[in-house]
Amino acid sequence: MANPLIRYRAHILGPVGLPGLFTQYFDAGATPGTAEGTEAGARVRAFFESIKASLVTSVSIQYDTGGDLIDPTNQTLVGSVGGATPVTTVGGSASQPLPWANQLIVRMFTAGVVNHRRVDGRHNIAGYSTGAISAGTVVPGTATALATAANLMSTLITTAITPVVWRRPSGTGAGAGYAVVAYSVPLYVGVLRSRRD
Image (cartoon, rainbow, N blue to C red; front, top):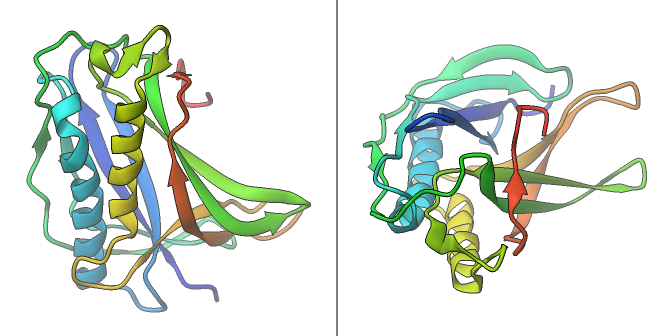
């Protein structure tokens, strides 16, 4: 069996339009445990802590204690891992929020290719203040800071784990997790109106 993936989740809480759900998958080897669950939470918290000054004060991020274990080949829930619960992150900007549907995007790149297409992923990040946007595009300094923060999810704190993009199983083959090799933040603004966007 392929290594199970840790499905780690954080909850973006705030005014009308939220909550939002942030999900990151990690490959933590064949037998992940509490140390790996703690590491997953610490890395996701490091990401949000790095950008919290640009998130409005009405937004907070609460973190799960550990996460589920998923068999990437067939989407089966095969267990869970515990971990230390990270301290809640609170936004630090007193500016007005962007409309909640308008979100910044983190793109995740892998070396995986399936059916002649690159396996890439993305996160939509809600809660930014209006100062993150100028003339309809993301302020370049804000984009750079967000990309730098995203790299913290690949930065070792205590225990080795690898952030991945999970390609789910489909009619064209089994699912698999592909290691993230780079992050970028485009200057266009994402619009998320539903879970399917």
